[in-house]
Image 1 (tube, rainbow, N blue to C red):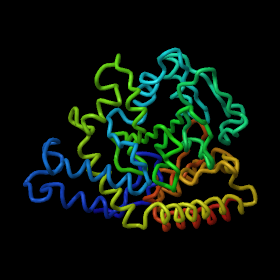
Image 2 (cartoon, helix red, strand yellow):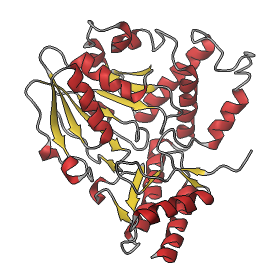
Image 3 (tube, rainbow, N blue to C red):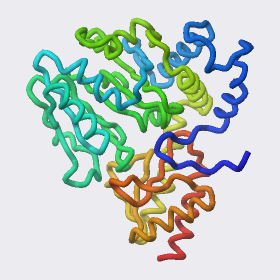
Length: 362
C-alpha cells in the first residue's frame, strides 16, 4: 500500500486508520458468518447488533436524553432539507431559517418549495464571515421550527452559543461538527448529520429526534418521508445503508476509545489553535475568512495575498502529502478540514508547511 496522506478534504473526509483496518479484517468474513458485512441480511441478528449498538453508543457519547430516538435514513443530509418542511410546515405554520452559508441557504430554498418559509436572520451581507447574533434572529408568526446550520463547512464558521427558542422547536444541521464537542441535546428538537465527515463514510444521515417530533410526523406524506416510519421500524422499514451504519458504529467505538467527547473537544481546540495561530502570526500573509468569534474548529478557511499563490500553495502542499486543501469555489483560497479523525500530526505538518511557504514567498 502506498503511503497515506493527510487528508484535509471536507467530505467524504479522513477516517482513522485503525477503523479502516478493522473494516478490512471483517470485509470478507464478518464475525464468523462466512459473509461480508455488506452481504449479511439487514434482518439478521448480526446486523441488529450493529444498528442497535450504533444507536446506543451515540446516545452514550452525546448524552442524549431518554425521550429521543436515533434514526438512520438514506438520502444524506440534503434529503432532510425536504423531509423537515414536509413533516412540519403544516397547519399554516412557517419554517424559519437562519442563513449563515451555502447549505443553510439550500435548506431554506427547499423549504420554500414545500410551504411558507421565513428568513429569521441572514449573514450574506458580510459574506458569511460569521454566524448570526442572537438579537438578529426574528421569528415569523406561528413558527413551525427554527433551522440552523451549526457549522458552515464552506465558509469556516461555527455557532459557539445556540439560539434560545423557547417552545419553538430548534432544528440543526450538524453534518460537519457532530461529535466534535459536548452539547446539550435537550436544546434541540431534531439534529441531523450526514455521515461523511465525523461519523463515517457517505451513504446515510443520522437523525436525533425528540419523541414529540416523531408523533407530529405528517401522515399525508409517502411512507418513506415520515419520521415515524423510521422510528416504528428501528430504521429497518427498508434495506438501510448497512455498510455505512457498520462504519458509523466503528467510528463511535473509536470516539469512545479516544476518551469521549471531552477528550475529542480538547484535541479539536488544540488542532484548530495551531492553524489559526499560524494565520494570525503571519503578518498578513495569510488572511482568515471567518471572524474570530465565529471560527470553526472543523474547517479553517484562509487566503494568501493572491490567487497565484493560492494555487502554488495547494500544489506544493500536495507534493508533501497534504491533500484536499483547495477552498470551495464560493470562497476560494484554502480550506483545511480538520475533523475528529485528523491527527494532531496532520495539523502540525500543515503549520510547518505554512510557515516555510510564507518565509519563501512573503
